[in-house]
Image (cartoon, rainbow, N blue to C red; front, side, top):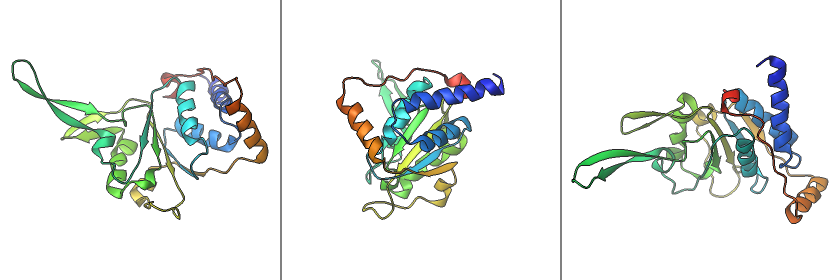
Length: 210
């Protein structure tokens, strides 16, 4: 793929995501740039600004798998990376089987990441840096491309924990998600109450992103 073809493909991805997301052009641009650069992005904003829809739509446009992890104070690291189970067959033989967690996807939304404890937040460190997950001394490789889009609420909101420095270092961008303008709110209302739902096209695939 030539540089010009890559550029046109990038514009096509942004345009298709923009068919679903009203406004937020800079947010879409920085999210796509982070994905193509092989990084991860941290979005800060109040709930209800279409952050989940953004990642889900982006996964559809580039034909990649999508997973969402809702971070809560009682979330455990095994709920993210997976766990090892013991299986027993009909002959009574037992064997270990790894049950992958939601981290095993191309695009992972870590929703409200700062509502979980630092111990649980750290479960993402290896995945974001090494693109691997270690469970019971066994290394499991993640699929490519792998991209984490984490969202966090402003720290002054109740029930939030600050992200550790090591966690912040894994993000290429931190983007403050602004509230829509009045005109954008009208357009959102028209789309959500109308009969026509925008359907983005698939304009790329995982091989192109890599």
